[in-house]
Image 1: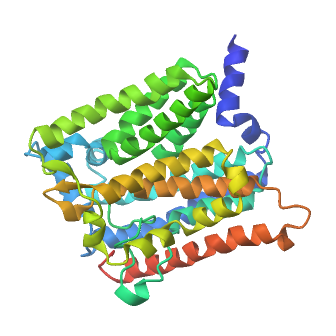
Image 2 (image 1 turned 180 degrees about the horizontal axis):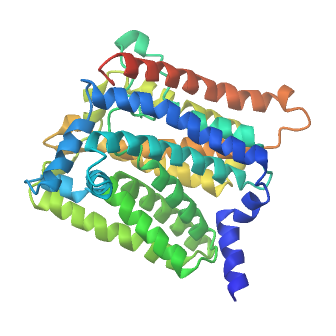
Length: 407
């Protein structure tokens, strides 16, 4: 019985594939991924937090200080307090040796490094065993890619109007990325009816609670997408893992979301109310909403067009697109009053766009471009569609480093 459970765990997580590739090259590449990502994030996070810049970090750090000293904190912050509690916990565990600004910088850098390492390992579990340096390339570049910022030449904006990816002003959306990858993997496992232990289900439930308390936008986008695919499976009479879907994903998500709604809205929190207002938020951010939207999704859109026949049968890509569609619909159709300009529904589109990029990169690595990948036109299309996002990411990094602005 223990052997069966172990095999199930190995099958689910890809440990069997990963363990067979614990070579010097793979270990070296993994360490390089962590070091490079830390080297990318630490300077920008230090600059954005320790100098005068336009950011959300400072206000959240002061909320954490208010929690520590038991001063009043707004109800909408208590609705998702995990980032602040992480600062308080780090301060307490270090016996006040690490202050709140230092721990904030460390959390941002560590979460990005953890995301990159998870991508590296997740890609390594693919059946075709992509090489370590290919996986390292994707893991590192996914940290910095941004929408293709061509309209910047017209309106001077690197962030406003796009569905953002790299984010250098908000404390929670990047920390949400490891949760996003983990919950996406759990969701796919449930939809594929993989047999999971009670411990896996409890771990998933804990991840849902943590993600929702960090920022609810992942939960309110991913769960509806999973629900739609579940309905499709029911219509096709395809089995799913109901225990994981109900107890590992839906139930913990709905319970926490219900409590958050009560704190942030029913209690008169800053959101006030949610209204149906098509394009109201988008038009406050930019006059080039349409073109910026398509430049935000250029890479996954091109790959989907080129490989449409394969992607229409690829459940990972379908779920990623569905989650992004839910997030984009929330951004374009809903708004909060007061505070419409805060664009809080944009976060769901952002985190799901990151997921879509990560899943699309995984899809690209699954493709067989043999016998000569260098001369395969589809291989060229894949990487040429991705390259502008990397170049734009480098440009945005420099902009956010040398100016106090982020938009």
